[in-house]
Image (tube, rainbow, N blue to C red):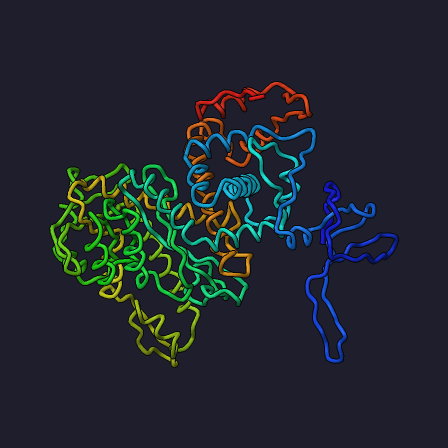
Length: 530
């Protein structure tokens, strides 16, 4: 248990002392029990080390038992540039006001401090959080967060279900001005067997672990996370979508146009989407009956006319009026020449590998091996118990006839074919959020062990995602021009340091041009508000 030697507090009542190895430890009683025969026993915890009769250095147990947080005691020389810009952007997005309204100003500032740490360090664990906070300047008063009390923060936030719902409602109202929102689902694994939502299901990271599923909404224009919905790891995406849409109806999702991938192209999903949304667009897997029937009417020569060109990537397409799962709309029948050529090339390589394998065999293959070869080849007995083979072009053509085609169903009458393809391609903004969560924020593991802490940590990580996405969007052009990645930009900003005393605060050196240019991207100047 770490002792915070920079802190000095009064020795609490209900304690006793025990000296070991030249150090006097302060123990606090945590419970008392009377045994048979009138004897008593107790349990206790070390809460610090003694300085004088009435003063001690506390440890994490002291703050857990007392219910308070240690004060943030900054070093004299502090990193300033990153934290100041983060805070200004945090306020500009309205996050400080929303979080304060939902959880109180004190917790809002703790959430911001934790989000600053997660974004800067690219982690979701708080192992070094207290050290990092003591090395950085904050434009606001905030308590020091340690590994132990940040868990209490998660539990406090997670236990406030109304506060979480209030914040998510207010934030979604801000992002939904975007009008077009994407939705997708990922899974986050956990070793814990204690939490109710952690269950085994389809794990997208192919790990043999329990998980919680997380549905994420993302604004396609702003590229900001709009909302999130965690649910039990054993529930499939399509089964839960109607419940997500019903819940989000209270947050104003009815007025937006939603974009989803082919994993939601099912009857129950279409029923929920058509009943509650203004419009929606869904990818349609090529194997569906509707698509097969449309495919028979396709004329590739007509489809690839220049009038149907959708992009410079060799993508063509046009709309066909149709009805899918009882919902009237239009389906974009598309064809990608480049993708078709690449898939045909890959398929031909597969056939050649199979031919090479068969050429090395001396006898007719049996069982699963025969099944694998006979899918695209006709095998016949040959001389000396051998065999001969030839390509089954009917099977090959049936397998390759759909390669390069894609289908997107929409009920949004405003969209042109180009608009719809662009929006559907932009849907990868959701996938980038998941990549950001799992890679740049190390959120591929939930390292908490209670349902309340899980709910609280998810909210803090959601806020961190908002801020990292916002920083990326604001600096998009700058990053391209400068050929640097966001983590390096943040590290360069953190090198802008100040000396802080009781009387004054000043820069140790002049800001660099790089640092000033970063601030300009946010419409800010580098100046101390002393």
